[in-house]
Amino acid sequence: MEYFSEEASAQVVNTRIGDGTDVRFRTIMTSLVEHLHAFIKEVEITDAEWGEAIDFLTRTGQMCSEHRQEFILLSDTLGVSMLVDAINHRRPSGATENTVLGPFHVCDAPIRRMGETITLEGKGESCLFQGRVVDLHGNPIAQATIDVWSDNPEGFYDVQQPDLQPRWNNRGRFITGDDGRYCFIGIKPVSYPIPDDGPVGQMLARLGRHPWRPAHMHFLVTAPGLRRIVTHTFVANDPYLESDTVFGVKNTLVQHFRRCAEANTEWQAEFDFVMVPEEILS
Amino acid sequence: MEYFSEEASAQVVNTRIGDGTDVRFRTIMTSLVEHLHAFIKEVEITDAEWGEAIDFLTRTGQMCSEHRQEFILLSDTLGVSMLVDAINHRRPSGATENTVLGPFHVCDAPIRRMGETITLEGKGESCLFQGRVVDLHGNPIAQATIDVWSDNPEGFYDVQQPDLQPRWNNRGRFITGDDGRYCFIGIKPVSYPIPDDGPVGQMLARLGRHPWRPAHMHFLVTAPGLRRIVTHTFVANDPYLESDTVFGVKNTLVQHFRRCAEANTEWQAEFDFVMVPEEILS
Image (cartoon, rainbow over all chains, first blue to last red; front, side, top):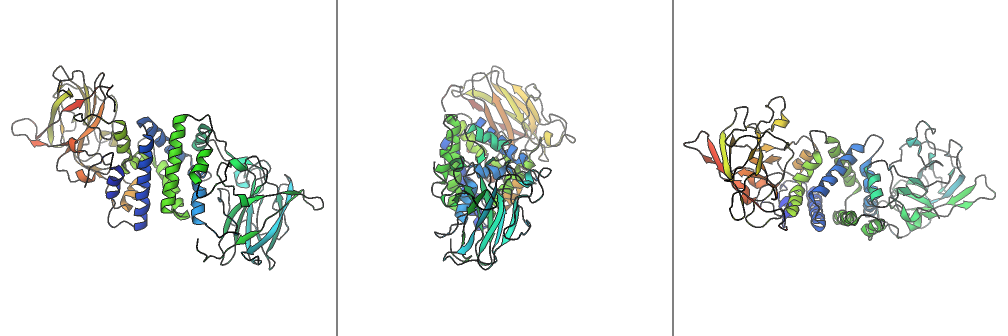
């Protein structure tokens, strides 16, 4: 065994890993230690800076509660959540792209009939969302579940305001028929800031970054034998499209919302979801 | 501005940093994001693994309290604390080397007279610690303060057992005279495990690593105009010397403890501290 040295620091640490260690865990920890040591050497972190980092991580952990996950916000704002998603959900060209799930999804939203509204408080600019769920060849997919959720016109999800919004406001699930079509009425989403009253908000401020996300509708699309799609559609021309604080925007997800002249809603937005089989290799 | 892509992920994140951002903070965060993204790409972290990492960091933060700093334990056991120390305290050959401060130092320990004991509970194998504080040319340094602390024979520091050990047990400060000499009576230290009932202990177990530190006496040596020394002396032949769980051991700090035939103590250990001026460049 070798004592610690600045030169061989990561190697000395990694040599200690026991022979019986799970191969995958060894691979992850070895790479983590190498990159962590390389970072510290590259910028020559001072004692005081490392003390600040320890304090930041501690405060981030202590900000977490049943209703707040500050480490996920940190992962989101450093682009790590999008990177992990990109690595794990590579798809063939033409398939709908993923983006981050976000912290506001709730399982088991009410299943509604096609055409129904998900907006229960009567606020906001109404919008008809419609389109098809299809495969790579354009064939309709029946029995697909489209789970949707958005913020309200003040920029808050129902779970953030349990005393102010009806339960399941701006949420619902819709199941396609043989034509693969979906349609429902919601509101045109609005942009909003992520919670920025904690350590992550302080980090963003120090980096000269804002905490805003561009307006978007969340979709989680599942169907038997097909890969699930976790994505948003973004409102074109939103001022935060190019500076989404969690880096969630992709070109193919930006959607043109059109004014409705004849329909019962003020806006309409069309988007088709293109699903791929589970067994397609990434 | 560019939307997120797997290929350019770190660049996209770093391009967002504001123009007015402190230059040093920009340097640190840019390097951090590059290395963090490189790590995730290298091992292709899965969604489930990233979820586990978020959970680990959260639990580590929530384990921290007034009496426990789990993120420092994490930094110590990944060799990061030693690396930060090495980068910040490079010294010319011949000067005494640093090692980690550890979490058990307490400021303002009682100042004792040379030759006095620091052991207040009468347990353990007594040991005479002695030597000189000198400069690189061997000249004695007067008015140097030697702050010492060690565990008791059961492997606990006084602050870990406020109800079982007298306050300031195995702690004291000694100030050198014109000859630069110091001597005091303590106990021959014993090896002990770091607190391993939290997330860091679980990580060590999963890596097939033990939580033990080899027996050592802590020293913090200060003198006007000279760089402070934060170090330990380690008991030669300790079974954990080559596997110190915080990587604190250096060759020059391993000390031979000798049996005393004639003195009032069972053991004696000699060590000279070699200090360098504040202004020597690292």
